[in-house]
Image (cartoon, rainbow, N blue to C red; front, side):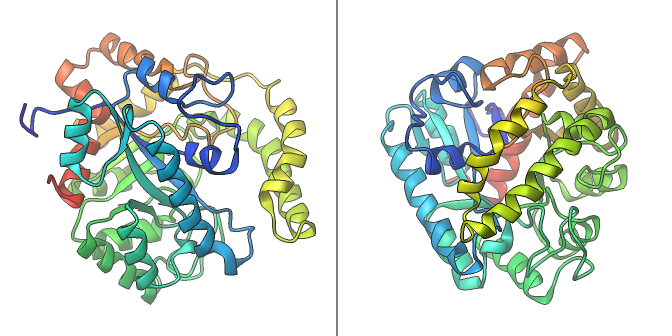
Length: 367
């Protein structure tokens, strides 16, 4: 099978790396009763590859961001190596195809939040450690770019941010614009020579919140040859869920930020203290069905075209999921809904991972 015909099932973003790194009791090789992703459920869902986002909460003191990022990558690689007969780190498109053909799952290392990149030297070290995708911002505006969920500082990219984009292009690192402000998104498209992705974003035409992509962004993404990977978080799928969830989640995050400072800048300790109560409240909310995810896929296809749409679950980073997409094992439900809506097998292959594979292969190399 040549590269053009190879359409693996790829998920553009999950936060399972945080569980792997911070929870010593979590074993990705064994089926879990909590969370969304482990190897048995990945196989059950038919997943061939996953971008694992290494995330360092900006509530940690700035002086430890870099150290914790590299430590997290080391732990992630070590834990994956434990199951080397089932999963393997992929550095490029050739690796993804080889690993998949060997019957294993390809793990692509990403980093979520450019706040951890303090210099081009750090970016280069991250690349040498296996990082192939960088989410330029998280919820916080950082030294390189504005976030869609924070106060704008640069009006898009800073001078340093433009240097980072150029270096990412040179090295072959995928630029992820999820979380970035609209201004940041368009400035990146003006400066990058490569396609970009929105690794876990939804459509603003359906759910009008700053975190989602509007139609002008989708059109620009298509012209850029990039891909938008649809997020499963109900708060991004419909405005009612956004209001209901964020009413609880915003209070939780504010309390967590305050408590983190009292704990000497330790957000993990604060989260363990506060999260159970927040989850009890959240679990009483009504969640939409998984067909709403396909509504967002439909809209993106109508605006950007079927060659520019993918999936990016945000699993293990979202507190709630749609009914029918409780974890990665339910992934065939999306395929089934696409079939019901008349999508061809070729187009389903593109959406479920072929388009993302094209971008990864083009930027990181096919071998």
